[in-house]
Length: 280
Image (cartoon, rainbow, N blue to C red; front, top):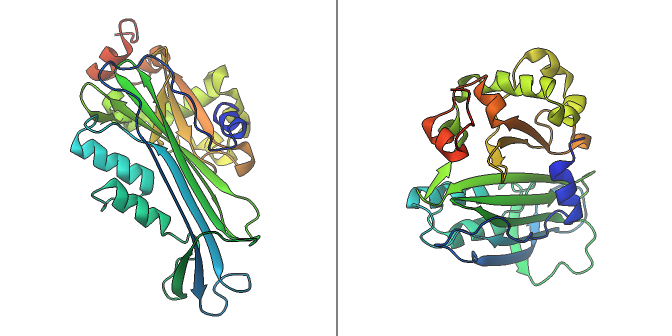
C-alpha cells in the first residue's frame, strides 16, 4: 500500500492542519482560516434511510484559503469549484453554505420532506458526516493547496476520503494544470511505464488492479503536486481509481528528467523546474 499520503492522513487524524513549509513568497502572509459547521435533522417519507426517526447530518469545514488578490478571478472561481464541487457559486460564502446544507447520500428531493437546523445531534449514534479541511504551503513562486475531505454515511461499512491538490503560480495568479507542464495526450501510457519501471512506485505496482496490468494505460488524474526540490511531479489517484480501497490513496512519482525522455515538456515546465530538467 502506498504510504506517503495515507500515513499523512492517519497521523493527522485525517484532517488535522499542517504547518506551512518551504520559502514564503514575499508578497503574501499567512492565509486566512475560514470555519463553518452545520448540524441538522432531515425528515423524509417512510424508508427514507435505513434507520428510525430523522436522519442526522453533521457537516463542518476548516479551510486555509488563498489570500485576497493572490489569484485571478478565473483561478478563484476554479478553487471554489474544486473545493466545494459547485461551478455556479460566485462567492466563498455561497459555495460554503450550499456545501453545509448537503445531506449526502440521502438527498433525493422525492423522499426528503424538510430539514431542521439544530445546535447538535445529541447522542445520535448513526448519522451522515462530512468534514473538509485545507492547508496551503509555499515554495518560492508556487503555492499548493491540499484539500482533504472525509465522509461517512449512516450505517455504512466504512467512510471515504479524498485528498485534492491545487497548485497555484503566485507570479501569474493562475492555477497550474498538468497540460501546462507536459503533453498529456500520451500520459496515460507513461504512467503505466512509471509504475512498472520505477522502484519509487513499487507499492502502487503491488496494489494495482489486474485490469491495468494489461491495459497499457490509465486515466490521467486531475490532482498532482510538485516536490520541494523541483525534481518530481507526483500524480495523485483517489481511492478505487487504480487500486482497491484497502490500498488507500496512491501517488505515482514521475521524476522530471525521466519524464522528459518519454513525453514533451512545455517551455513553462522547463522554466519552472530549472536547468537540467530535460534531455533537450
